[in-house]
Length: 421
Image 1 (cartoon, helix red, strand yellow):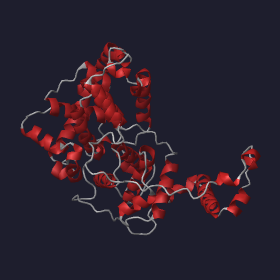
Image 2 (tube, rainbow, N blue to C red; image 1 turned 60 degrees about the vertical axis):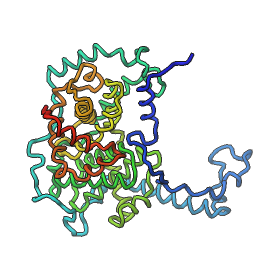
Image 3 (spheres, one colour; image 1 turned 180 degrees about the vertical axis):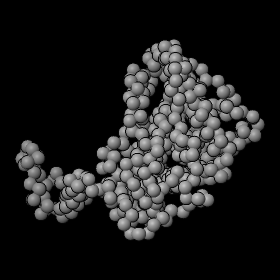
Image 4 (cartoon, one colour; image 1 turned 90 degrees about the horizontal axis):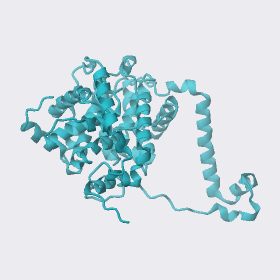
């Protein structure tokens, strides 16, 4: 039996399964990664299969003597393993590796008028949790709980949507997002840094992220890794960008199908840092975070929220800009990514549809009421209205067709509306 699917179902599948699922297709096709080197020799030819019954039967010394390629790689890998073992053995001393030991002082270029700005004068921004919100969420869950596995919803017929597991998956993601979050006031332990410097570094990471042609999920994970590391370790200002780019390198290995090589990263940095600096910083950060990198970014939550409007592609495309604006704000470093996704979706929905309603169905799929979203919505709209001063890099990025010309659409919307939530 052939099942016909509505157009919106095919659209969401194409969006999820595409290699670059969060961007419009680029007109320029370019080879982003260098192809792997050819296999020089098949080591198994040196062994007769009938004589090999276990790893213990492989004569490593004989292979090293007969094959110089194997010998070189074996020595290289052994050295790397030894270094990692040494790092774990000296874990307590690794926290000093990123401290300033050359006396260079503060070298990060600052565009603000003063070192200690008032970016966080109003305190951290987090979703409210009161009885009214909890009651609304409970009513939404009671009404739409069956949509997860309902056969009448043709989205659930698609195997890639994992309908029977979706509810449990998102429950787990909600637990993890609260577990892997930075300290909301971590800048208090950083005598050389402030929130304005952080915003400058995040915008620089946006530029590096574009230069390396990475997927959006990598950027959000990189910022989370950077903030979590700074919640645990004091650094000096001239190491701030090193921490940021190392976080981006780690995140790329987690998220990318083909992560950039260290050589590619150094090419993009154009001599700003040496290979040893990146390697040491990466190793130190991983050990400090105990390799806990499974933080769920906002994109899965954004797709979940869009189900309330039949996966409206335009809303989701424009919402990405608002989510990137949110991660620049020092007030929301400890905010859950699901909240970012819901608030960004709300703004984009009003912009695209001219409708600021937030039904129980929206509450169910987003996990937040309208009252919970409005503080973050107001903050984000204020930043976007002053984008020429607040985030010039993001403004240029989202003016392009590749990113749906979101800036032009936003400015047109704001010029023709008096919307003030």
